[in-house]
Length: 73
Image (cartoon, rainbow, N blue to C red; front, side, top):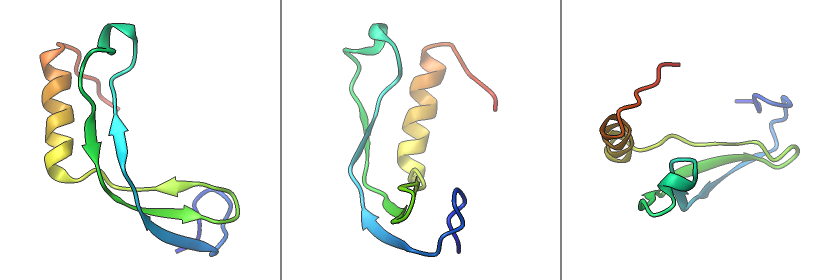
C-alpha cells in the first residue's frame, strides 16, 4: 500500500517502543502508557503509521475517562 502522505511505495516495517503521555504540565507525574507496535515507515518522507494494541487502547480510554474529559473525534 502506498504512503498516505507522499504516495511512495518505499516503505519498511519496524518494531517500535512508544510512551504515550497525556499533554500538559498537570500530567507530568502520570505514568506513560507503553506500546510496542509494528511501525510502517515511509523511507522517502518519514511518515510512520501504527496501531495501538487493544489492551493499551483500553488503558488510555480508562485514564481519559478518569480525568473527566472524554473527547469525540
